[in-house]
Amino acid sequence: MGRLLDRYADVLIPGRAEMLRRLAGPLEGLRFLHVNSTKVGGGVAEMLQSLMPLFEDLGLRPRWEIVEGTPAFFEVTKAFHNALQGMSLALTPAIRQTYLDVARANAARLDLDADAVVIHDPQPAPLVEKRNGAAPWIWRCHIDLSRPDREFWEFLRNFVIRYDAAIFSLPQFARRMPLPQFLVWPAIDPLSDKNVPLPPEEVEATLRRLAVPTDRPIVLQVSRFDRFKDPLGVIQAYRLVRRRADAVLVLAGGGADDDPEGAAVLAEVRSAAEGDPDIHVLSLPPTAHREINALQRAATVVVQKSTREGFGLTVTEGMWKGKPVVGGLAGGIATQIVHGLNGFLVSSVEGAAFRIQTLLENPDLAHRMGEEGREHVRWNFLITRSVRDYLVLLTQLREFRR
Amino acid sequence: MGREPYSLLTIAEIREILHRRAVGEQELLENIEEVDGASIYYHTHSYYLRGKYRHDRYPNDFATWVAEHVRDRVLSERLAMVDPSAFLDVEALRRGLIAVLEEHLDSLRFSPRALFGDPFEFVRAHIVVLPTGIAVGSRADLRAALASALPETLFYHFFEDVFGRGRRSGSLVAWVAEDLGDAPLAAALARINPYCLHLEQLRDRILRAFDEGEGKA
Image 1: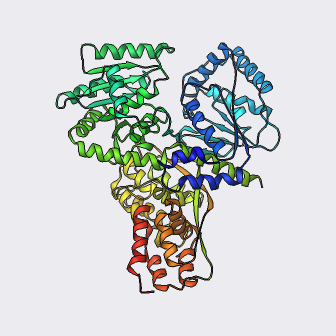
Image 2 (image 1 turned 90 degrees about the vertical axis):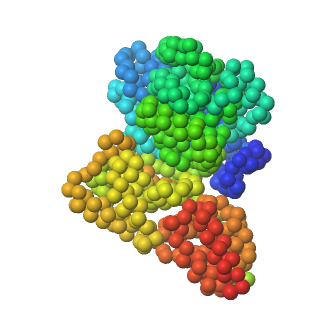
Image 3 (image 1 turned 120 degrees about the vertical axis):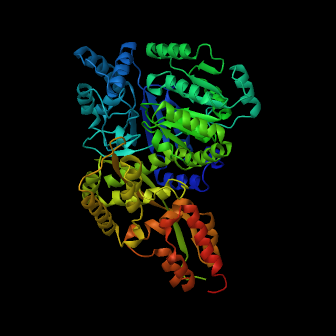
């Protein structure tokens, strides 16, 4: 027990690994089931890939199951995902039936026997119908529920209120419901391909392969090609910066292959960048973790100029590599950036340009902010903090039941 | 040597969302009047557990929100100066915060709002107290243990075990005075106001109290 955790000890605040062992001690052997909709791709799967081995290392007996569905089911749940974020949805009887049929088939197929169960997001939410025994069931919602489609939310709420507790990433993402709701910030795994230290030769080789020059400062935004990430605003800000400072801009992301809107945004971004050899638009596959890692390590300033955002973990990824971050005042970005300490919060193209320029012209300030950012992540946004939150929650739920 | 070894403890917390929101100063006041005391405690103490912030950050969430989202500098400065150590318990602290807010709102005769900012979200923490496995029996052992203790351990002994339990000094100071029989060190530790420091500065101040009193016990 604890060998994997030892590998994290070098990057954690001294003593934190021991705290986890002490928290986990009374939970030894606890059968801890997580269910979501995919084992690969997306932030939830990434986080579970890191969490499961750590729970096992701490003596729990974690198990990770996924719901299986038809293409029609995943079309429906994608529409549900959008509806939870405010897009209107015509919740027809056929749509309800597709969702419930697949959910109930999974409930019949899956072994849901455990001492504690965490169900992630809406896809598997109806599994709660099959709960029995005293094990606590927790709904972990990774989505912003502050402005959902009303009709769909009423439908989903009927399942959610059967859980013992819910977890949200930010208070403003939650909704009033008759069950306790807990706050767990997302976190990054410092040992994953996206965050592990890379040798300088690999960073250089990666940038060479991606045709990104390394002879000038790099301003980098990593994000899906999505309007809410405001990639066109980043190009406008960069052009204002270029009047005074020499730098290249890299916009790296994915999501354009299977998303028609993503493809449209990527086309607009390419069009806006056309003819400017200093703007590099990189459409990367979802598995390009080491490439993203290398770009973040090579960057001088990391930007996340979102106008609407979930938690925005790319901010934490940049900070962990010791970079100052200029972020839009949206979603979880303000939780990660302490304005003036480890980066700057901005609300306009001009604001982004001003702060990027300030950081390019003040390498000492950029360095100091980068150091502060890494420390801020070490305290608050590493995966081991997520482990701690789950262990404390399990301890508390046991107490509530005594 | 002390008669009984002293066991260092530490804490871990999970935060609960309370669905109480304020978009203006009047609502902030009303929520502070009504919210669970654990939320007042959280919003006046969580700052210390989040990292090594600089001195230009306000040490409580109410002051920070008023400064950054309502942009009322006068009230944020007044709230920042509400020192929990001046109050005996969280209910007294609540009354202190209410007094500052009421006086400010009375003087303004209107309630500034976070027109361009986010609402204030009330949260409370459920705290689990854990053994560290470290027990000390001498002044030297205690100094060494505190020098390498987790930030959360310092938080437990200088915040949670003191103000969190409605007392002026915690069990650590009592043990130093009674079991270790080192009244000057106990007095020096009791004099430290942890609310003016982040946890690493607190650690430095604690160690200085040991070192300055070396040989005087």
